[in-house]
Image (cartoon, rainbow, N blue to C red):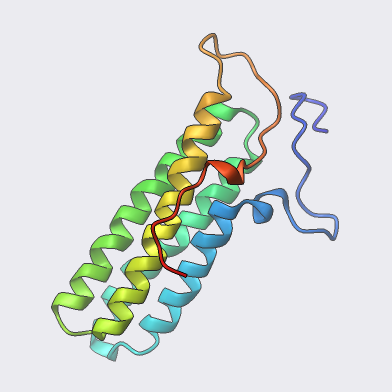
Length: 157
């Protein structure tokens, strides 16, 4: 427990998986970033700007979940989750752009779109859950744990 804040979430480091890495929203965002990294490796060198922008947005999603998780209040955590959601919207546009310009195949577009939607669903559900744990008077409530039963997926397996 973090003595200075009374936060009951586990500290990061120390050999085990960091607390944020256990969050389904983080896992989906991380998988999407890795998949998009592979896609950018196939882009022509003259589109380095697109690769850079896409990877910056894609890695921002899990990175902000991780950074927010390490913050000392749920309100701060919500702010970082909001940044993650905005970065995911940027990723959505880049997937759309690459499809419209023929930089990815229709199959890649379908796969990336499904991954992005699944990530968005988990992130949205998690934001709703964290928001419910922030009391209206700003006082801290119980520790944050990800409720898997609240997620609904329309993505085919």
